[in-house]
Image 1 (tube, helix red, strand yellow):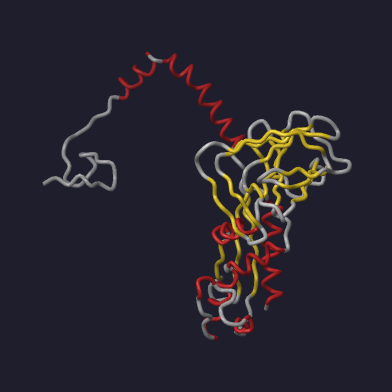
Image 2 (cartoon, helix red, strand yellow):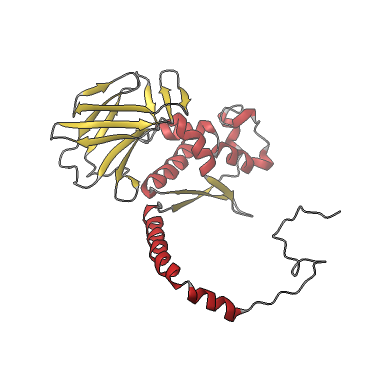
Length: 288
């Protein structure tokens, strides 16, 4: 019985036990290409345009790396029983102290402590012709958002801010997938599918805006201006939603035969990734 479960494309002349002999007539192939020259004349500009768009619309990815020395003393026990380790993993003995430290560095508790010291919960974006670019700690970004965390918040979805005048702007939202976050009890609900959540309202800079899922104030920055031809907006991303992401994104490796580890993080906003890695290391050192 023939076996059709191949792990590679099946070519009889290339596979063991295959038969047959194939000859390629290059002259015939070239003649066919010449006879259809107009297809190439039409398709080449389209392929070039697609390649240009792909390059321009793809975010640049930066890699941040830090090296840290881990002490040989088993200070992990100073943290108490497994309060920083995930899923109830118990700390191990002196001999395997490095394993303890690696587990602590990737624990939800340490990541949460790190995020508490940062300002990641409002992410600002600028829309260019081809893509959205995050602007972290950009001094010329035209506004900043003050979130009312006592109110449930529309999270992760994009909130567009379009200026009307020096004092007012249009707020627009159209999202099918988002979260509803309640900071008072640190819970969130994922909304997926169904009708899109749509909002279009006129807001006044410096005045609170509130509806059933939002409560915040958009303040203009002194000396910063909205630039013509660019779009602006923001996302509210609570630390609780960042935590699992950073657990997956930060790669921690031990340098062989040494008490050093490397921490690697890739992202499209290098100053934000650098700030996170620096803060993670600083939080870990403070807790030792």
